[in-house]
Length: 356
Image (cartoon, rainbow, N blue to C red; front, side, top):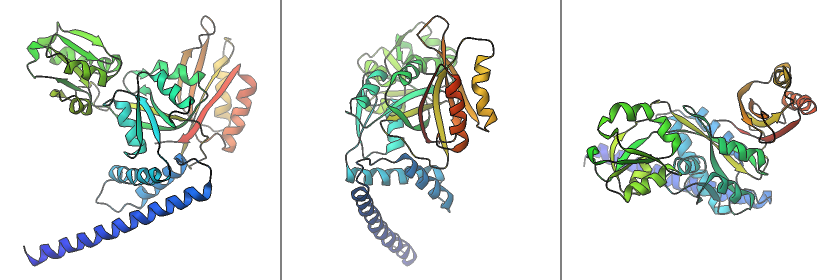
């Protein structure tokens, strides 16, 4: 070994020791904070968002900001775990994109709770079995997830965070001879996201039966039980069920992204860069929705999303899901919502939370 190489490695060893000591000092301070605040709440989305934003602003490189976020998310995850175990529910089984979103938001030092349905995720949070839940709400290619929106309308839980997850789909099976594939399993959303690719690139399995599954991971599980079956799912599902990758990144849109919401039972303070989600309805009169949204423009509030959904309370009656920039405690937003509340037949603030 050259003297120069030895010196470089000695410096790395010294820095590693310093990092170890600093991380443990941080963990001890986090424990002290937990004892001081005495609220029992260990996850503060606004505080963690501020830390991640500051670390990115101060990052000199060469590590990319997205990797800095991942690194500090894991540090905060380990520190939270020292205060109290955190249970996070998601649409299972293990290997779904929902599980990936949960880990992206909370880090690996959590107890994940796989649920059979989106309804079950909400139930686990509302009953207190899980502290938080992660649910898909919209996909950049296929639009809103109707069941999540219906449950947001009914739930007593609040939205306290969001996760944007780039979604890459894989065709996976026990073997790679596609001529032997007679069935393909996947979630309906994933089939839709890969429709053009499947039709164009797999003429040899054009006669295969396409079968809907409750989740991508469940599709992978079924493919693992049948040598003549394949699944459209994520790479993690292939690893868990020990399936071969026949084709990768088969989504029609390379920028395909799913937005997930984090639901919990706490209100989130302002972080400085927030979003507020709400749902409202009005009488079915000419210009009614225009009048209902006008206070947002009048108070300088930017609307980033508007989605209609049947209210299920009457024929041709709708509710409108709206996302706006800012926190509900911001002066202009509070004023606008006050006006809307007086005009709307129904208004529910789903939550304010840091935006990604």
